[in-house]
Amino acid sequence: MDCIPKAHGGLKSVFLRFISDQEGATAIEYALIAGMLSIAIVASVIAVGDGISSVWNYISDEVTAGLAR
Image 1 (cartoon, one colour):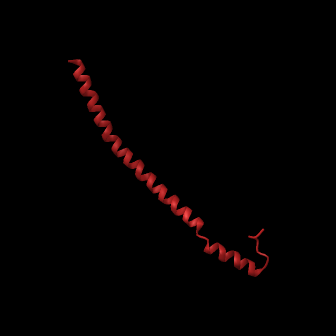
Image 2 (cartoon, one colour):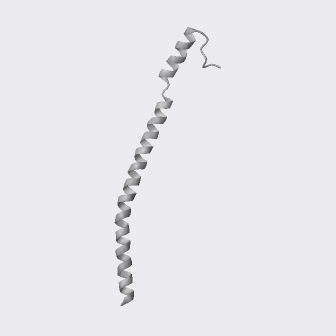
Image 3 (cartoon, rainbow, N blue to C red):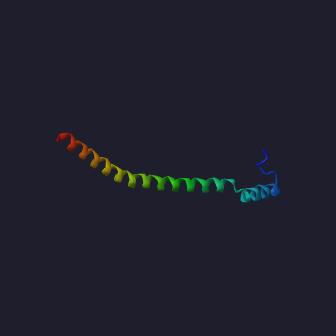
């Protein structure tokens, strides 16, 4: 039960350790970066997907027209 302060000095020690601990902040920063990258990837896929859909529709129309001749 190391994290439970035994006296006033112990409380100060726990508080100073809490303030100096950077692991949680680093994890949050990585999570924010991952979230922003995910949003950018989804936006890119949506933008490119619309263009590719138009190309495939054009190809399909041309093939259908060619087979109908």
